Image 1 (cartoon, one colour):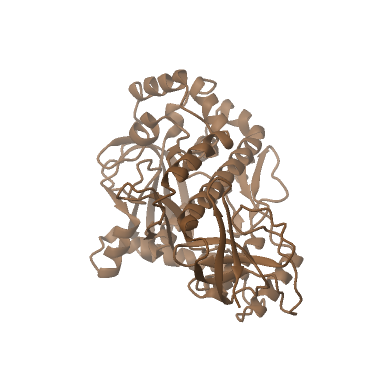
Image 2 (cartoon, one colour):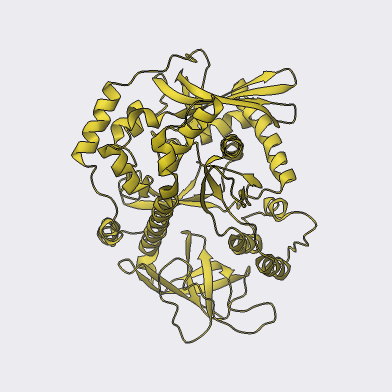
Length: 500
């Protein structure tokens, strides 16, 4: 992902920041070093790996990821076929390395996913798998689950199959580099076709009522000069959206395979209820860009510009529409509710097995169903237990992300107590009728208890990018001037006050 990187001013607080970030591992009870028996199992699995008989090394796959990524789950190739397209999508063959019932299997079920901490990631699998033999690195012969998609002229799915094969990626592309090549006209055919297919898949998403909350992403990255951490924040690049559309198509195909076979596990999310939609409509009207409901909320969200303060506030408000996501297992009977409302179709997680536990099970189930084979008993038997494992893991990952970001934000402004900043009100204490209220989300970044005696809201300052509580009567989407009252790294608490 391409980011605008903002250097922190943490000269006197860098030691406190490092200590606070390190303490998160203990506070949140994050997994520690990989147990020796599991690591030994992983090494033995790598040494004894047998590549599949199906050979697709003549297909020039490429990977497209953040520049620093080494755990590469997916490799892609697209070709034109008449007036349609052929898409080959290779997914890392993690099941080839994990023996059911072994120490490695048990440890991955404890972890659930890779956790991304500012001072280093905590991998789901040992690095000998996740960043070496199991990763689809350029020039390396790899075992992979390869999805073969036939698309028509509108990029609608016509036929799909999936089976193991040996593949070899020819290049590791970064999002920034790929976007640059597309923009300056030097992109190879595969990237040109990715744009072509991606745009058509975006249109299909619009037609089926899918929605994407395109918030500017914030990421904690280490400073290149070794001086602590930075918050990198930027809207995603178009190529990321087009690449994500291939992953979405794969997840939808996996869901359809499992629904037809009446066994599997879906990623589900209910549609927003009428109350949430009505509240959101009122918010959009109050912020000057009303959504009247004549187009879907997904179409509406794609029109928003996060660089506009009022529209950024609308995007924050839209988060209330994306709630209730979970995992729905089934075996023998299709569940009543199968849709992922934000996608607008049934969907399953299947494209990130190096980083997410559940994908390993979905892949082997889909391979068996696609090839009329018996589903491995270990995968079928695990289905009822997976929702609880993933829910617990997702909660922990969310707490880590929020706490880490809060800690770095506090460090970024710790030396500026009393300083004034320009800010945008993300959520206000003053509704459209002008009555003062209290917001219910503390200071907006997970820190502070929100027990002030007067009204308060949540503001975002631009330089550095920090979101926090602000005391005073605030109206969502407005630009204000604020003064920093408190920034405590250890407690992760930041507090501003509104200036006249």
